[in-house]
Length: 475
Image (cartoon, rainbow, N blue to C red; front, side, top):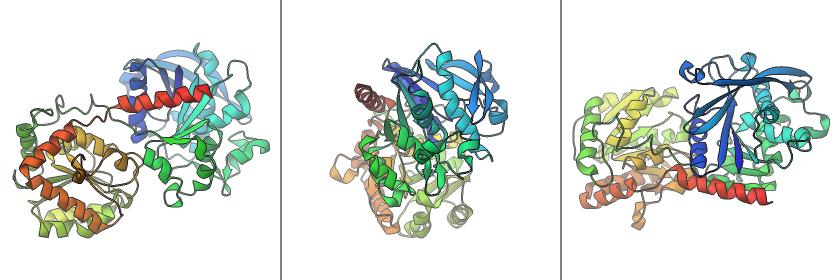
């Protein structure tokens, strides 16, 4: 089986979020299971020179962009056993960053079309083209409309994965012919709610639509989660499924992580976790206490991540319970200000770093006792899995991938603390149950060991993708 994995970003080359993590990890896991998976992405100017130096030029072609043709250079590199193809066009990709440019619609229409145009030049024909998010959502559309019956393109299946339905690629209808090259006869496949909608095209035209967790696949059928796409998704629900992401357990490994004060595993964590907690408290200028539960937060500071709930009740928890918080993140001014004020009032109890420091994130995962993640919606979420990997018990709301990866320890088998309603006091109740569990020292050791033994690797997820690919090829 041959899979061409199409992504607008992939670690270690270029990443801005969860898609980059997935595109850097899932293909490796698939290759280890003898699936011929290769990745294709744009050749951004911001990719580090050390990676560019390892790229080999294969050939150059021209790609149709509506009525004109644009240069596309094809470069190849190998990383972690996976072959990557980089598509070069300096007009579209020799810029700072990945997204946010005035002509993103044209840039990623070019990329989506180029993915298909390079196939005859690779000496390698995929059985499946797996596209991700709106930036490559036009590939299934172009394939269905213009390539499916061409020699050399027969019998290719397409998969489209929604990582976050909020970002759909919406543009004006004036782009249809002149920029996207889509005629009137196919316009209905991409038009939605008076606009061009890239994600809608991917949902309509792909043979299989997936999301990054089973619960999220169900949630996006509901208007509260779907950002307007629920009518289309309900019509196409027969081809929709959810597969929970994993994490790179070699990268996130408390036994080998050089960023933390002491390494450990499920058999020897007690003293090492205590050392990491002490080092974190000292680093953040907090009171060094082993007897108080330390709750970590690593996140973008935005309302939908649950910070509106935190703003309502976290100070109350500091009055009512003996607890500490350590926060790393940046985002909306109101939440940055809230945590700064909280730190000023309670410097021994609240440590804060505005920004994102990867090394400090590791220290928090290893040094905290509990990890707070009360999102309004969370397609998959990786932080709760990383927290488990470091033996730090997550406190989460039951939504999306949080619900699929964390179960409440009240059942005697769970690996965290959960709450259902998006309500500040429901969240506070889960925090208090986590604090009470921490104060039961014998029971706490059992919970930490259970967290460390959870399998959050890509192995399980890769096997689910392989099952889906095989079922798709049989249809």
